[in-house]
Amino acid sequence: MSRTVIHGGLVITASDEIHADVLVEGGRIVALAAHGTDAAESWSADRRIDATGKYVIPGGVDGHTHMEMPFGGTYAADTFETGTRAAAWGGTTTIVDFAIQSVGKSLREGLDAWYAKADGNCAIDYAFHMILADVNPSSLKEMDRLVSEGVTSFKLFMAYPGVFYSDDGQILRAMQQASGNGGLIMMHAENGIAIDVLVEQALAAGHTDPRYHGDVRKVALEAEATHRAVQLARVAGSPLYVVHVSADEAVEEIAAARHKGLPVFGETCPQYLFLSTDNLAEPDFEGAKYVCSTPLRPKEHQETLWRGLRSNELQVVSTDHCPFCFSGQKEMGRGDFSKIPNGMPGVEHRMDLLHQAVVDGHITRRRWIEIACASPARMFGLYPKKGTIAPGADADIVIYDPEAQQTLSAETHHMNVDYSAYEGKRITGQVETVLSRGEVVIDGRKFTGRAGHGIYTPRATCQYLD
Image 1 (cartoon, rainbow, N blue to C red):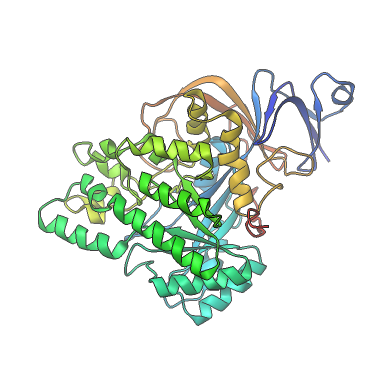
Image 2: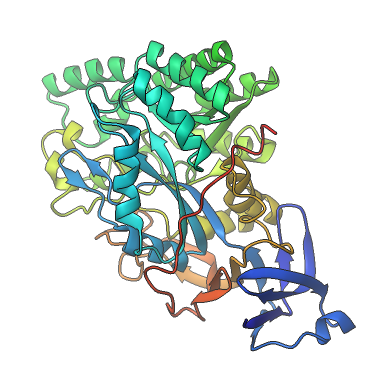
């Protein structure tokens, strides 16, 4: 078994910052020892990686991606091969993607379809959540079976009537089932019935540009749905994880629930922290690049999101990576914003953008690792195998240069999409080398990984509920 020593770096986890060398063997972290000590000096290795002046951090865990997702007559532009390769470039070593149940079909059929898409194609490790699009007695029973095989979280939608939408009764039943089997309910919290009325009215008034996508998906309708989801979970005795929280009033609903001691959790995404309705309003249909749901909000919401991350009212930053090319895909909505495929690229830039947040003083280094690595690993039953640097953990390790300068651009990114949501943005900090289960997949800014290295990783239940 090959042995690798990473020496001279500052090891940063959610709980510690220590100058330590790391010994890797057989795909796992075997030991840490203070740099320069006899213990560290005694390690023999087949490969030594010099991390002097660099951070040694756990590989990122992105708990919300949509590779190859069908939406509105097209598909997300990243395959499991291209998307996981881009993730590796950005220092993410595990994704949790969403398998989708089709209406009238079983959960098993949906899950098997996603196993088939991902199997043998991923550059990094992966797991699945299950989207419930058809809550009925049969699919409720199936939830128990999925939990037993490591698919321990289930996403429901209060939005998208006629596609993914579940009504309050279906949501309550699914939550009751989860309260019995240990599963975590994930919620897209927007009042889709009301939003559809506003969409219809906006289009009838000739308001067809991308910026109206943000106008009709009101903050109040995200807050209302978040409140309703919390109360339904409370009645069911179920935990609740609210995905892609974008608005101050929605954060307040989550905070209020948590202050009552309820097992309610919140996730936000880099687009809500760094972009705004100013982007949606860009001229010449450029705003279509930024159409996602929940939508981008006015800039003043950003400070509430940062505060929520600092205070642990929000626990996780994921990407909701669901890229559609501007040419030929986003353009489907020219003349009708409601036909623009909803989703943005981001899996490659999450770790860098959050490091920029450290540089900018929004969060600490340890909180960076917590919200990007440790908390998502705990939330989705992967810790301490993933999300930390400790003996026994998988050797998913990133050597990160905190001083490197880079400019984000579609010219240089590795996602299979023809634009960057952060075109021209200057970032301090860059991934240099990435190990996935001990295998070097990015070596000094060169991709050395391969499709099929990544393996399916079954999950335990949410570790915040133990």
